[in-house]
Length: 196
Image 1: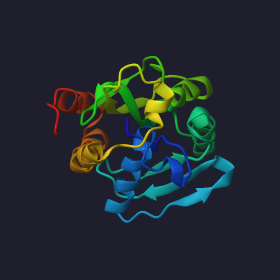
Image 2: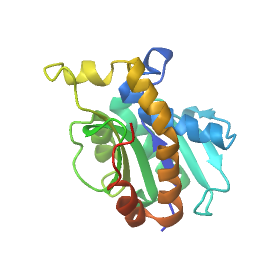
Image 3: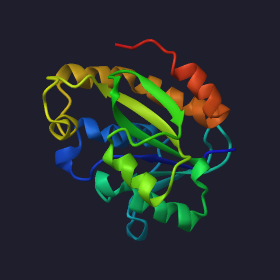
């Protein structure tokens, strides 16, 4: 079953652009740049969207960045899914995951929100069954730091370098997911050693 919508999660606004919580936006922006895809704001859908006509899987798909702020990501995805008649099983969501080390990516189906407010909102408004493309931002340092402060904190210089060096891996992983499906992506990406 082809993926028809890939959503990257983050918060709109320049002040959030380089935060850990915006890795979904960062990766989707890099994908759009790679293929010269222009973003357009679709206010009725609460998202910036672009159409990718020739992805690896062959079927045209939408890329979307919800502009609702992270905690209401599900509002935008529900609106997009209804308007474009996209089943939840054909939606992939790119987001940051504190439980995965920085530089790693894991693909999964189903599960809990894991403390991620954007995923909690999607589960509330759209239900489960979407594909999760989880980008590591862990471990949390210092360990006693408040989770909200950590995820909304900026990547430091070393972390920015890791993300920049790992972007090709993130994008190639998306190509695998789109062309070969979730099982192949899980088998390929979930076993990969950290790339730092």
